[in-house]
Length: 335
Image (cartoon, rainbow, N blue to C red):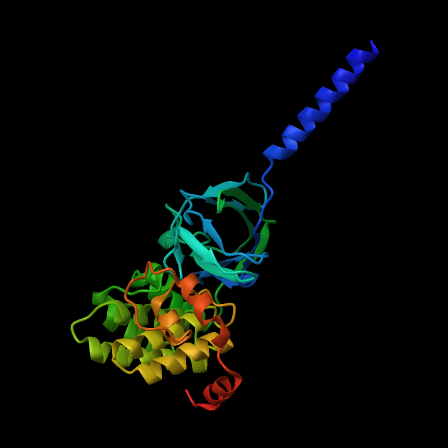
C-alpha cells in the first residue's frame, strides 16, 4: 500500500511537471494599450503593442499581425457576450512577419481599428457606447512559442460636439470615413480632401484628413515632385497645429521620406534625426528600414530591405546613438 501511494504521488508530481512544461514561458515582454480612453464617433482608435527584448542577445520574433493570423481581438459590451473582431485593421506601418529586436530594445506597433460589416459606414462603434477591447497575441521568439493575453482595455465613444457634427456629416456623405482610417485617400478624392481641410481646419477629424491626403501624395501621382512638396507643406502644418496626435511621429517620417525622394539628403537627415531624438517610442524607429539605417546609423545607402541590419548595427554601435554635439546642433536647427 505504501509503495502504491509513493508511485501515485510520483505520478501526480510528474503530471504537474509535464503540465507546467507545456505552458509557454515567454522570453519577450509585451504590453498593449489604447492611445486614450475617450473617442468621438468616427475618430480612429489606436491599439498600441510594445514588444521588449529583455536579454542581451538579438531575438527574432515571428508573428502574423492580422486578425486571421496570430492576433485576436474581442469586443466587450455591457449585456452582451464577447464578440470576436475580425474586421479590417490598418497598421501605421506595414506589418512584418519577422521583427529583429536588438538586446534590451523595444518594437512598437500601432493599429487603427474601425471596420465592422453591416454598421453605419462600417464603423466598429457608429454610436456612443462604453466598451472594452480584449487582445491576445501569439508568435515565436526564436523557436520558443510565445503567447500574451492582455487585460481588457476600456474605452468610451461619445457623440460629436457642435464643431464636429458638420465635419463628420461631410465625411459620411462623401464616403471618406474609410480613408481617414487607412491614412491614404484615393487619387480621385484629393480635391475633396483639400476642400474638407479648408472648410474644417480645426475639428477632431481634420488631422486624419490631412494625413490621408498626405498618404495619397506620398504613394502616387503624375507630378511626383509637386506632390512631395505639397506633402511637406501639409505635414509641417500637421505637426505644428496637432501636436500630440498619435500620427505625429509618422508625419515626421513621411516628411523625411519625401525629402529623400526629392534628392535632398541633408533635409532628409534633419527630419530622421528629429524622429530619432524626439519620438523614441515610435514604431518608425525600426532598423529593418534601409532609410533609418542610412540616415540614423550613417550606413551606406542600401536598397536591399532584407539586409541583415543587426550586423550593421553591431559594426556601427561605437558611434550609436549619435554623438551629443551632433544631437545638439540638430536640436537647435529650425524645422
